[in-house]
Amino acid sequence: MSKIIDGRFSDKVMIITGAAGGIGKAVALRAAKEGAKLVLADRKEEMSKETLKEIREITSNVEFLICDLREGENCKKVIDTAIKKFGGLDILINNAGITGTPAPVHEMSEEMFRNVLDCNIMIAFHCSHYGIQEMIKQNKEGAIVNVSSVAGLTGFPGHSAYVTSKHGLNGLTRNMALDYARYGIRVNAVNPGTTDTPMYHEALEFLKNKRESAEKAGVKIEGGIVSGKVTSPQNRVARAEEVADVILFLSSPEASNVTGIFMPVDGGFTAF
Image (cartoon, rainbow, N blue to C red; front, side, top):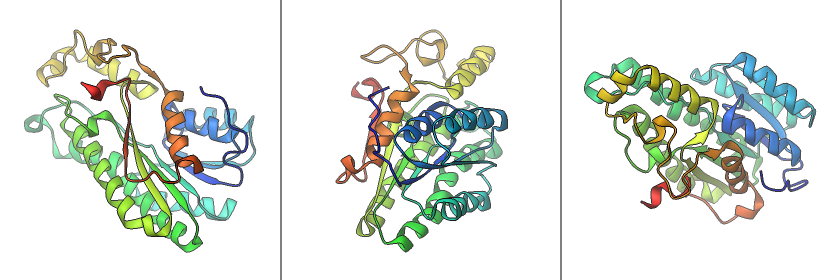
C-alpha cells in the first residue's frame, strides 16, 4: 500500500458497495485511515462482520448494511443511511459485482446472463440513480468511481456475460460523466486486471474443478489467468491495495479535472 495521506477524506462521506472483501475492503480500510465517514454494503454476512470489526479498530464513523443490492430498494436504503447517519454523500464507489459462470452465448441461460448484468450494471445504476439525486440536492462537488475490469476493454473467450456487463459499465461511466459534469460530479471507471481477491480465487477454483466445461467455453486452463500464470508485462497478479490506491486517487481532490476515463490497473495487460 502507498503511504497514507492523513486527512485526505476528512469530513467526506463515502459509500462503498461490495465492501466485505477484496478491492472494496481495501478501499474501505485505507479510506478509514484517511478520515472518511463510511457507509458500506455487501450481501456476504460473515465477511462483512469481520471487515466491520477491522474498520471499527480505525474509526467509529462507519455503518455496514448487509443486504442484496440487486434489489433496487436496498440501494436506496444505502444512500438514505449515508444521509441519515452522516448528513449527505460525497463519494460513491460502485464496486459490487460477480464474474458469473463462464459459457458462450448459445449455452448460457437467460437467467445466468441477467444475473451477471443485474450485479455488474444494475447495482451501479440504482446506487448512482439515488446517489446523484442527493449530490445534486447538496449543490457541491461529488465523485463516483465504477469498478469495471479489463474485460470492459477487450474480450475474454467464454465470458460473454461478464464482458458484456463490464463494457456496459464503462459506457454508463462515460455517459454519466457527460451528464453530470455541470453539477461538479466527476464519474470515472477503474479497470483492474487479474487481482488477488476472494472472487479471483473462487473463480480459479471453480474453473479448475470444471476443467472440461471451462475449456469447452474457450477458457484456457494451461497458461493464462486460470492457471495462476499471468500474461502481462509485469508478470504478476495485482494486490487489491494497488487497485484501491487508484480508486481513492480518482475520488480525491487531486483528480479534480479527471472525469469520464477508463483507468486500467492491469500491469500493462491492455498494452498488448
